[in-house]
Length: 186
Image 1 (cartoon, rainbow, N blue to C red):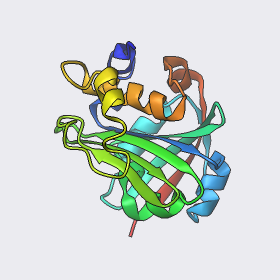
Image 2: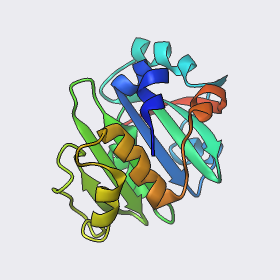
Image 3: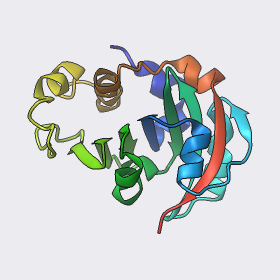
């Protein structure tokens, strides 16, 4: 699959991001579960850029949450909520969550949570160093997604698609409606 569109059309987001797919909660339900009062709705992810950097902190993340094929897509500029175990493990009880994260310094993580367990975790730069109950089972998917010799970001999108069945496309980032809120992590 070709995901070059991500860095070409959304370079600021592609530079440092966390993208999360969450099945089992609407955007409103997700914010309610986290005890967060949602704020504005925006169209497209570009509206998250400036406020994300203006309010950035190690423990507070601006999250845009939109509906996508029965899932909620969380978009964070320079955030890491989607790979934060203390938030995602309890949120995943009775649900499935798949996240990928990348910093401007090339630190990256891929996580799959389900039913309160981190099912899979690895750094896409080192795809052979996977841990979690699904680590061995997804070996073929990891190879087929293109982690070896391909774009790691594109491979993360493809592996997330294989796990969730959801294909994220550019129009979601351009035209999707996102409910915004600040999530504090203790």
